[in-house]
Image 1 (cartoon, each protein chain N blue to C red):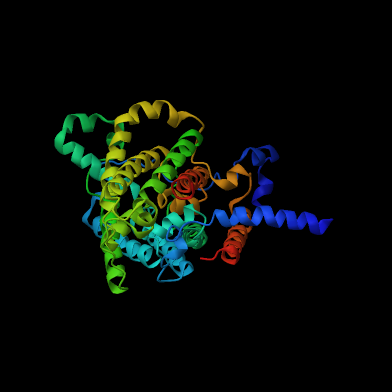
Image 2 (image 1 turned 30 degrees about the vertical axis):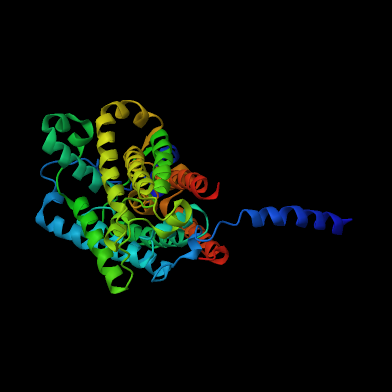
Length: 212
Length: 198
């Protein structure tokens, strides 16, 4: 057995996910393939499918998105949770076969919480998020045009402050590419065998109690 | 005794619950829902994210596209200044995969709405109109603009949006993504309740 050849101390020191490659830093270099024509065509194709699905899922509609924030319409939760369950199983299966690389975003407690709360405030005011806003515009909700302009202005405002933020807020509670199994010190597979049924149970519960 | 307590409870609590029932038209359930089952749509988005990882080595994420276009506009007017900003040194302001994803999403939603007879062509959503007045154009545009600014700033600070963190990050079990998506909903629920229920 492989584990018997290791000293017990070493086995304890090991993070349960040490062998999981979490992907390199998400910075651009001019040679990176995302600027190639093939990537642009793929991006547009995936975008068309994404927008089509968002509209068919009803989440391009203002009232469906406000509905989840008013705790009346749980369509958004159902779509997100189902996508997460299917995606988690799919991505980790493909990753274990060496077919895909992970792209884990860094955990920065202060930035995740402050940015997340701000995002929520903006989400309620605008009524669309960046992806569903594009879908809302395509569907003919012209108020999304003002949202798109605002999104670009807000992005530029962040860029203006990015130097300062990267030295302050973004360093507070920076834990790097932390994953849930590491947080609870569990091997990936064990974690998934517990996690997926929990997500399914939550989904089932939402389906039982929600009117829509 | 128990009956009296129950009756007292029923007489005080039930009217107060009735009083909080929203005005006609300000509930999401007064309007049409999704054309397709949310479970089918969710499962297909999950499969789509497998495709983006496999074919493009990219997680689904919409907000970066807006940031890149904003950088391109900034580059047009103030090239030196824009290129000096840390964010645009790390994220080149150019048309890339994410920009195409957002443009594609506009087209895809148009196709879906056109095919399903759900094209709206409206400047003020009906539910907004029921709450703030059907002629509240200026208020709606202002809220959308300010909301967009706050949302994009929050997304960049948090490191992603509803798709980047909420779907792609969450499905990769990233701790920060789960924290961010929970905060999206806390901030959103508090603000939406203030807007529609007080």
